[in-house]
Structures are given as structure tokens and as C-alpha cells.
View 1 (tube, one colour):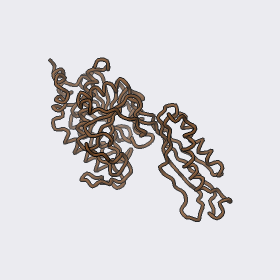
View 2 (cartoon, rainbow, N blue to C red):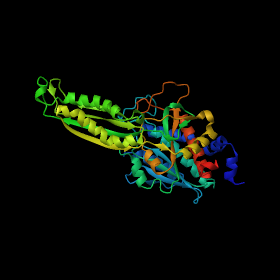
View 3 (cartoon, rainbow, N blue to C red):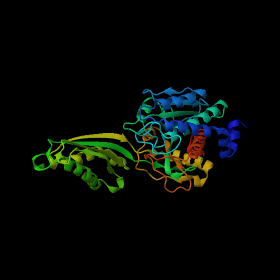
View 4 (cartoon, helix red, strand yellow):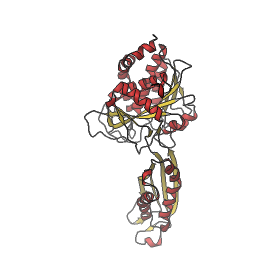
Length: 410
């Protein structure tokens, strides 16, 4: 019996527990280091160097992406075996860290409020274990580790990573994303769409300005902007099938600086989110058209920046079946939930557009806690036992997928 066969003969929890060999504590420490030194999109220099150092110490050969941040690193066992990819994202968000913890962000106005520090620690931890397995002759294939920059901006770093060969030769790709609605120690997954397609829109209105005593002699810019902000989402709901799940929600609005002056300029920006692929295609035309229709009676000049974001992340049915089977072997049926489709965006969708794979939810809520802070909040944090769970899940999913490249072999 080979070592690989002997390992497989063990129950998966025993197999994974032996393979980790104290690595979880190290990855928790690394996560805290990244969390305390967050970096914004395209500026993940320190984070990339930290990950590269760990990979180099393990005897691997990471290569930097063309922008100077982000890494790709192959772990090679059987060079003739199948190739899979594991993806993590590196960037933080431009918000203040509001937690009182030792690893609180040391950079004002920047925080890891979406869990990318956890994603990085999980994929790195899995990669280091896979390296050990490869050195022992127990890795029946190849695994590409992708540490992607700039997930939080449009256009994100996924397209750049793909252009740099991130999935060249890859047969399946997997990623985990923190979910504060799921308990640590569990994961959630679903076949088909798991996120929404998302674009961004900015509208700028301008006019000659004037006195608030005589709005009829100028362009009442504040009224025009307010009408655009209120009526455009309402009109959208009457132009699209409600089942498409199309929504426009504004995040910023600014105009004027004095209560008795009609301003010359005003601006609002927001996101368009949609569950239906056909509606996403039509939104790029429909949203600007409606904005112009609403603004027209005010005679304001209208400029619109509509930026295509990301499509819906669509999990491959067969890959999802394999993921669920492997995760259940590790966590048991109660540890693998059915994920709801989210209106959030995730540029891992571009990976799934190229290669069959799975984006799954990693539970990070402390069990017994009913009201955990949501993503993109300054007080967001995780139960760090989720890091060990995430590493174990990726290891079991990866090894199963390498052993059984076809789902019907499971």
C-alpha cells in the first residue's frame, strides 16, 4: 500500500490533523500580522512579501504578478497529475478599524473588514501542507496558489491575474469567503449563482448655479440630484422583471456648501446589483437612460460613468457536488450548509467564468453568537478557529479533487 493509499484509508479528520502538525497557530499569527498592517488595492506590497517569504522558506518558488503585488505559486507533486487552483485575495478596505484588540489596524482609515486576511492565511496554510505532502510523494497532482490583489475595486485584480496565466492548465479552482452569518467550524455552499453581478455608477449634474430665492432663473441642481437618486431605483423596478433581482443603491451624494446658494455641481454614486445574467447585460444601457430621463426636466447637464464590475459567481454543479462530499467527510452533514445567493460582488466570478470551480462560504461567527458584525463594518472580526477549519476544508477538497478528477468517481 502506498503512503497516499494509507492516508486515504484513514478517516479524513485523522489524515488532516496529522498533516497540519501545528501549522494553524502559525497561520493565526500571520493573519494577525496582516490584519494589523492592512493595505489597499494595488498596494499590497508588505502583504505580498510576507506571503512570499513563507513560501520561499517552504522551498517553493512564488512569482510576483506584473503590478508588483500578488503572487502565483505552484506546488508540484505528480507532474502528470491534474492541476487545481486555490485563490485568496490580499487587499483591505478604506475604513477605520473600530475594534479594541491587540492586532487592530495600525493604519488609520484602512482595515481588513472583509476577511481577506483570513483568506490569505487559509490558502497559505493549505499550500504549506500541500508542499509537505508533495515532498513526501503524497500529492497526486499539482496545485496553483493564487494570491490576488485588488478584489475590492473595479476593475479588480482577478482579470489581471487571469491575464498573467493564473488558471492556465487548471482544471478546477476553489476559494473560500468569510461569512459572519455562519458559525465557525462550518462552511456553506450552493451550486449555481452564489453572488450577484455588480456594476458601479456615478452621475454628475451641473448648471449655472444661483440664489435659492430664484430657482426659476437657474438649474435647481439639488432638487434634480435628489430626484435622480430617489426616482431612478423606483423606475428600474418597473422596467425589469422582479425575478431578475436588479437593484440600484446609492452610497454617496454631495452638492452645495451654503443654504442660500444653488450649487453649480452635484454628484451621486452607487452600485447596481443583479441576479439575472440577461438583466445584467441590459443594465448598462438602462440605468444611464433612466438617469437622463429623470434629470431632463431640470435642464441640468448630465455626465454618467457606468463601470462594468463583475458577473455573478456561478459555482459549477459537479465541482460543487465534489466540494460538498469532501467537506461533509470532514465536518459531517451538520457542518456543511446550503448557502443563500448573496447580492454582494466577488471578482472570483471571473475565475469561475474561465474554469469550473466553487466559491464557498467559510463560517467565522463565534458559535452561540446571534448578532455578529457584518462584512465591511469597522468592528468586523472573526472567530479564529475558522482559519484551521478553512485550511482543513481546502486540503480535503483539494486531495479529493486530485484523486478523483471526475465527480462520478466519488
